[in-house]
Length: 260
Length: 260
DNA sequence: CGCGTCCGTTGCACATGGCGCAACGGTCGT
DNA sequence: ACGACCGTTGCGCCATGTGCAACGGACGCG
Image (cartoon, chains in turn cyan, blue, green, red):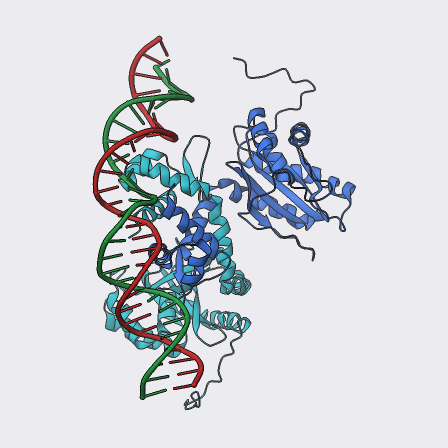
């Protein structure tokens, strides 16, 4: 399917690892260098790649342009940022914003920790569906059938001793998350980091993004982490409010559904 | 040359104008929708595009990822940013960072004005080679032959009454810029905005980027704008210094060239 | 409840365009 | 001056990308 296009896209991904010359790229893609060259020329013409003085290729500025546009097409990011920044300021911890794309959870924004201990992550990477707090929040809002389908499709690689390793475990966790309105990653992804995450709703009430706060265990123990939940939820609720969503009044027993 | 790839890249650019459906895109590219679909599937597989619930396509998160990487591959941006931010803080005006890519001058970073009057521009856009101050700075460092070639290739659309309209005019201007070490755009691009720009050098002394300050004429007249030059140059010199470049001692008459 | 329309999708057959090969030509470095 | 290294080009083959036409599911209207 679209061999040449896929090859070109792979070239871009390869170039993300750093600039490279023609042969290098050809070898990496295991195609003839002529082929690579022609693809690169097309990419260059549209400024998806540039060649520097030494004839090596690097990612080009068209990517900046498109990313910038894509960014403000995602109005969530712009709206969330000031709120997340405030939270990031007051707590000093790493803050992530993530959204569901297809069956992947993708980080779409990130604010760095002020503490010396940083965690590795990057905008555009996908989160582990069975471990990341943001993933739990986003999945928790999906219809049960879709949850089941996704849960069954996951490769449950145990990342730490706390990692959820079965579809049933995950589905149960999602139910909990849906009920309490926030999610915990208790060192399920990295042994020395734990996170909490909370949902962001759009005007129609659907969960369209999740914000999380990740903190090294050495800085804050479990109770300390959980103490952050109210502030985090307040923050995501503020974002949701900016998007036109108001938290429905917490009714002891909810009987009101859309009257038809 | 690489028809299918170019089509796919065009699709991405088209999607920058906002999400679109299959037929829309097919019409825009004037190809059969089947073709568009297969390209989009490939793009989707690599997450360069996403389809939302209503089957419309939007730019995907892979672009964020690549742009983020491309961004820190361009070490200039990261290094320049704090300096530009300081300048932006102290003056309050719009600051741009631009670099030469092939024969285009491209904005690679931007800091917004604090004043209510904003100017339109966007990271990734190309600057008018015969009008923008950053373009003058970047072109001024090129070898004469290349300057000539580029100058002859420009379409000298008169943007305002001050716009340079001939290759000779531009080349003369570039000589001035090279001599004085900074460039002025005296409302040559937009009647109500003028700018000054200064070069950023890498360790080998080559001009690899240019920073500019754009300000509405109503806020600051010509002398006022020129008063900013020393501060701007100090700023770009600081960036250059971070990149390992030291301003050569200003010799009254320079006779020292590379002794061969 | 059923029809019509609108879109995305699939199968197929054709020829275009992408591919590898091999030979060319520039630039360095020795 | 020679050789090694890369990017580039001409060429011929066939894989692959393309358009067409038919299918099918989702709405919406009557």
